[in-house]
Image (cartoon, rainbow, N blue to C red; front, top):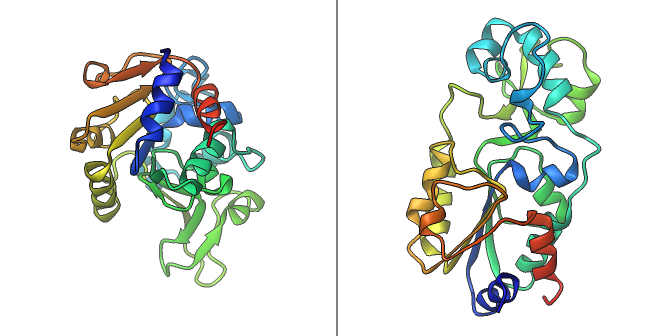
Length: 244
């Protein structure tokens, strides 16, 4: 029995699958990851400031103009569409197999594909708010503005509802992710190197027997996995979804 057939067998017998994914899930939608070949962190720096610094809270506070120049160019992908992995996960949810998607991504593609129970560890570029009065804005407000977007009500700076470097994850969101993983009978981890904490540490809360890792490069948790598949995650999940 090959890995795909074995994975299908595991899914058929499951009742509470949790999927935990990272940037690799969205690369097939044309959104680059951070640390892979061609990733954002390997790109040219137009002003000598590393990308990780530009996405740090201190840079946002000290140089919001520079932050938004980088953010609009490299972090917003309004034309991106859900790929085979997103669609397959939504199909698994509709079939009553998958209970939760936990994502490190901020692009909203899981919801666009039809997944309803999505835990966004790092927030979403689709949500924005005024730091002064809290008024909420969609992503179009950021895209259509120039310079530093300002609130139409109070003039405060509008910032994306994403977790920047130097900021902690939302405690309640992280707790929801912990609970979902702890209760899962199957945990599928895909498209993530599992090197960024505290998100990667969520795998430690899994108590079941079926830890499946779908990633094209090794992860620190490979030694704990029942199955490791190195194929593109869209290919794997699309194959699984065929029989749902």
